[in-house]
Image 1 (cartoon, rainbow, N blue to C red):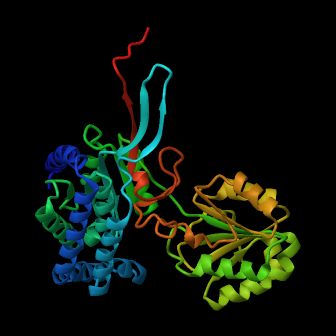
Image 2 (image 1 turned 60 degrees about the vertical axis):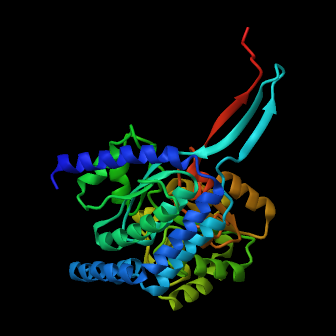
Image 3 (image 1 turned 30 degrees about the vertical axis):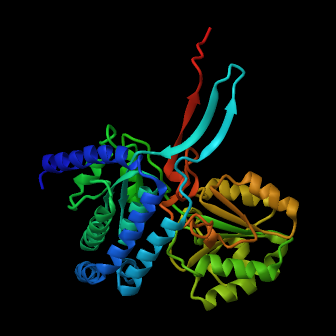
Length: 420
């Protein structure tokens, strides 16, 4: 399509989303849940069509030379489609935050005030690779009364179309407002720019994907962007740590699923326990196939590659780990705040006071004490499915569930009060 045609098509979708948002805001929780359950059933009924569409994406990906990890993210089968449908049912079962009275009070003049959760309105989601995001993003936004425009990557276009079609058709039969969930049906790169220019119609953009995509969206967007660039997560093993626990947490944080944003990328170890801890944890990590890169002090204790300054700021998303020996908790905090990405960082210690100092000093969305970084996840937090993880400081921070897809308004009631 020509750039002007893409711009016009996206603007039409954005206008339609704004109109749909008004209708969505008027749906009851019971009606929204009935529509969600219909969507889940419709997705299951369309399993054959979705898997067939996905096969086209897999074939195209193999022809392009996509790696095994990328192809696995892309692949759908009957079990994965069923899991996506199950995720919709989980969202239907979650409490609806819309309409929640966050606070209420009365003024001396008799005015009654409430702070109430309301939908954001219209949300653009720009994402790559994983076709399940089409469903996750759509249903989370729908549950919170937000109209959604989804723009997926070209590598999953057939899968995304099939999933969106199943959701739209099944939802419409139960009362889903027209244009409440829209998928950009073409893959022109100019559609990303076009969406970013729709500030008159879209209230927020949420990019999910690689750093390049997010930087592009941030540079072009005229509306607020909720994002995280990298997941450079740390585990700091303190001098008072239970070392057996520390080995378990480090191995799980790094190897349970290394290609995700809450996986461990840099291990910090207090110098007092480096000699006893590093050889043990190194053996455990190497048994899992992890390549180790260490500072000069680490290299004295274990066989590893030398770490460079670049390593401290790298999100590997792979079985690679950088290791640094530090002389104090303060040094660990300084390293994390300097080189981290404000995502998730953990201290392993038996000293509650030192743990509290760490939790109060590290400037990250999630700070953990004696817990694997892999728990930085909306589902693990009890939020249900998540729209993503934000490292922003305004509006939403950390795993974004239903509450983070709402705003609030003040509702003031009175009996004719005027201001003197």
